[in-house]
Length: 247
Image 1 (cartoon, rainbow, N blue to C red):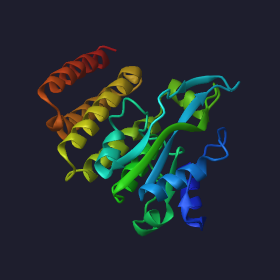
Image 2 (cartoon, one colour):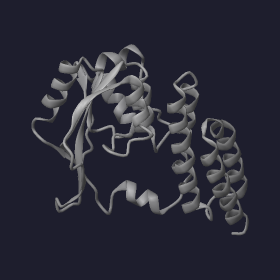
Image 3 (cartoon, one colour):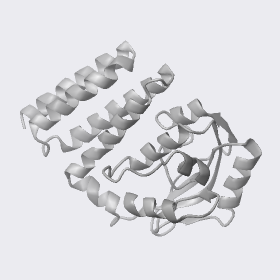
């Protein structure tokens, strides 16, 4: 997927870029709405709300509260890791991007990362724009299918699944000079996501690999957490290691 997107970025000639999954559909005025948000707010990015629905068109999730506004660069990056209200984090397809920003900073999708690559791209993009505008009004319809590649991959462990942590590692290395609250949110999300992943697949992953990754996560991310979360995740990590050791 990343290779196809990179080819699309190289071929595209327009002033703005939008992405869409083949199974999904959008409201006819989505692009116009996002374009207007960018122009009105002088923003580098615009994002909208969305509806998750099944193959029959029945809504599974949507945001009830309609709200719009503008985020600073730091607020937008922070929301990638800590957004409880508007589900902003990591969706590639509900946004409109400036082609000029992508070209100027040579932004591409990492073709060696198979999961979390969308959020990595958005993270890198937001690092080069001063603000983002948003509306929670749903213009994008995300269709989830039982036979989709994502659902199948969640059932069976493969090494490619682990690459979501490589995306986190890259974001961590790129955020060394960011405000503390962003580092804290990124670290907490990284640790929580990793623990949930390893809990699901601990019996399939070689113990040495699990142990090395846990040590790496602890070394690079615990420093940014408050004491309460350090204790919580340390205890969870011990339980996870014991579970893998006794498998």
